[in-house]
Length: 261
Image (cartoon, rainbow, N blue to C red; front, side, top):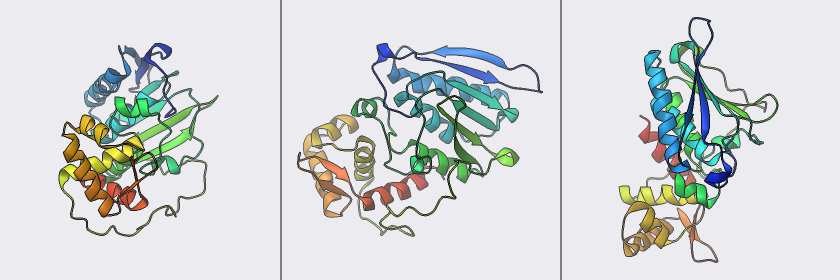
């Protein structure tokens, strides 16, 4: 799960959704999508409807981010289970798994290819956004190894919320952060914030790609990248493109925290 995606024709774009109720046999549905571009939205719509039917309270923003991350997974043996009256959603697969589960929540950490970034917003940010949204609702997101290989990601709220269990020591503040306690206030516009998030999601890109992704002119994208570089939020590389800095990653995390409140 959450590994580099392959081409559509190499993927089995089907998942199973299992709804458990009253201790009986689960109601299982199989959902398919025509392309990776359509899969995330379709899968999310189906699962959120099942949660609502159960009168569950898992935050939809967190659920959306977790399901959309399947776009750059391998879609191998994916099962999404709705449990505890819709207050727990468990996403499991039989993919290659996640080696460093604590780092998976870091903003900017991604194993996705550039092709994946073109398919879905949130590459490098989705798990962090999901966890922030869950915690805002009093819930948790946990990552565990699946039996026989792959990953299990569990979103829980209320009394069903699990303590984080990743098989690793308790998570410590990441030494990669430049400002672990607070991010200096930056005088950048909302559009420039979106440009910064786009750089994080893409890993490395130039003005033309920013313009295409955000629907702005190349000259505007160039100016916005220059402003971000002046603030130390992005840096130029040998190719002439920009990459996000540690300060930029910290600011994105601060920006995302405002999205989920």
